[in-house]
Length: 422
Image (cartoon, rainbow, N blue to C red; front, side, top):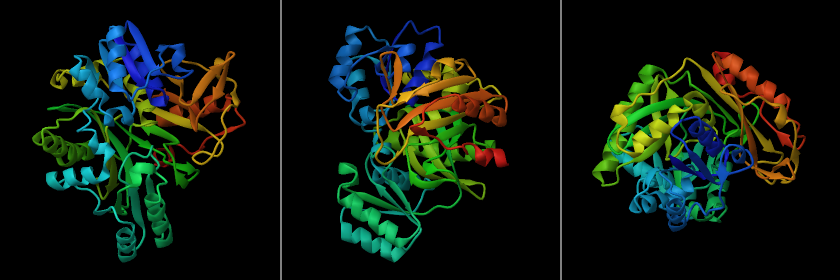
């Protein structure tokens, strides 16, 4: 098979790594890719949000299967364009991708399907939103309705912060994403991520994880795109996973199908766990980053077979073959992230690190110049390890981090603390 993966981050490096191991894969192209991906696949300069260009590229290169990594191409309708051209694709339609593209739409679906989620209100008027915050008090959660690269969520612990977030969003800090604002109740508990493959009719759970969104140690500082993750998530017991499927996932999929927009792809449910019950925090319509890195380390080559089955409506025919293992990933980011940061610093020590089923450094924001790996983004590397226990995987990951020479980068030293302390 000739396979095309759209995207150029750590998630797409992890997807490419897993797909490459499957003997079905004859040729692997990633657009646009990055320096790490270039070591295992062909990289192509392609506007991944231009459905026509992607469909044309797929035809010219006899692509059999397309995997769409990021959310932006999905929201732009790239999957629709590929299907119209007769190309098999893993990823939802633009209509179904609204589950991530609009937080207000997700609440509408949850209300109709009876899915347990946070109480909320939606606003397109700044003064009305401010008045609601004043009436509700804090803590409270302020969200830009649209896509904001994982940064459009402010958990405000006091009213002043909440009002400031409302003002910033309506002032255009998040562009069009903040034209409408969703204000939610603050839910207490432990967060976890639940991943389900869907084929429009059936759903197959493919893993759990917990990630670390705050930039600083001890979950301090502003939200980021994610500073690390581990899988599986102990808090998501078998009983809880059954509850999530029964009360959250299946009702959502049924409501989407009833509206004529069946969901096909991966549905990533962010959950809040309290008193042995789960409530929905949000949906994403793609693999999380950095959760994808730990999931792919655990799934390996079978990931391609599972994604194909979802794309072809055959999920009832497949099963996930899990090893009794654990994986952890530690993000190395450029100093200053998620605020202003500098690009162009040289990263050393990568050549001497192991690359196998238990050790991988997945690249995110990197380029290669004159044989050197250069930092070219905020989140730059995802140092990932797998082992029979989380403690051993944790040790392996941080051993690798210690061998990377990058003074201009930083990382959290406490990834995995939730599970390790228990």
